[in-house]
Length: 105
Image 1 (tube, rainbow, N blue to C red):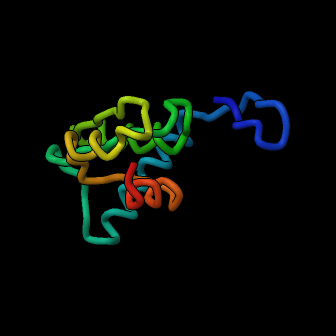
Image 2 (cartoon, rainbow, N blue to C red):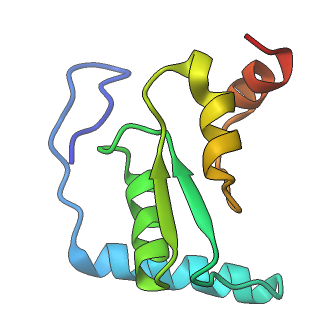
């Protein structure tokens, strides 16, 4: 995994299998604490870069529960259409992405 390079050149960072397993267990505990759980009926819309660790952990959680993962077409202008087509039950986004969705094309 490489850092984003926001304060300099990207750097390689080691992420152990144990840390990923721990993150997956943490997400599971978080959901259980909210009286929620992932099921085979859940759908995650992945639109972050595949090298993004958050996205990879969420995908692993979905795979672990037999849920589905849909991938956007790579065009922010089509993201609303991708959401309509894939009907994600979980959509993780930062405020700026949500602002773009609400403001329209």
